[in-house]
Amino acid sequence: MIKINKLWKEYGDNVVLEDISKTVADGEFVTLVGTSGCGKSTFLKMLLGMETASRGELLIDDKPIPGEPDQSRGIVFQQYSVFPHLSVLENVMIAREFERSALLGKLFGVAKRKVREEAQALLEKVGLGPAVSKYPHELSGGMRQRLAIAQALIRKPRVLLLDEPFGALDPGIRADMHKLILELWREHQLTVFMVTHDLSEGFYLGTRLWVFDKVRHDPQAPGAWGAKITYDLTVGEIPSDTLAKVQKITSPEEQQEVGELT
Image (cartoon, rainbow, N blue to C red):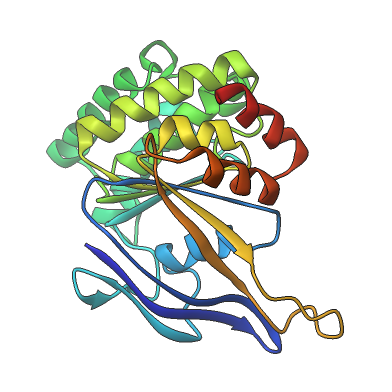
């Protein structure tokens, strides 16, 4: 479904990503790991349409990804993108309302009732049924993240992009969110790309793990070379020697967590 062909991303003399070529089929769950600043979030923004390729191709169904976000791709950031003046229900409904009434951002009559029912059903699925009348400031961090996920899913995207969505959550809440996102991935038959700094999270959630890293360095010109996908691993089929190499790329905290997995 998604084809990446000799993709480069540059900002002036600063090369962020270089010469990436991959294909991703419908329904895959790809987790992206690597050190900070290696282009993971930039790649996610390119999939969303917020950034464009400097060179190469990024295709969905053999067509260039549109130059701006659309209904086919939803995104959830670590920082909750919710409207503080709207209730939980209104925050989910508004995405549908703008989709159907771009000028007013409002629906009326039967159309509004159908969107309300759809939003309420989705909020039940993500565990926010009892909180539909609350406002974002009345929610816990985990509840706000559930709301952000519902906002993304209300438009029925084919591709869900997650940019460190659970990084700010406590471990217990993160475990609940892991279970939720796996259930939604299977139920909605999504193709998922998720950036994470938690390697154990990447192994647990994904079916495929990409490691972003710079393989070439020039001390005199630190921006001359960009990151590549140095490992493309099928989760559950990773040899121990490969796992050890991945550990060296990630942070010390992640190395400890991976050690617990082995």
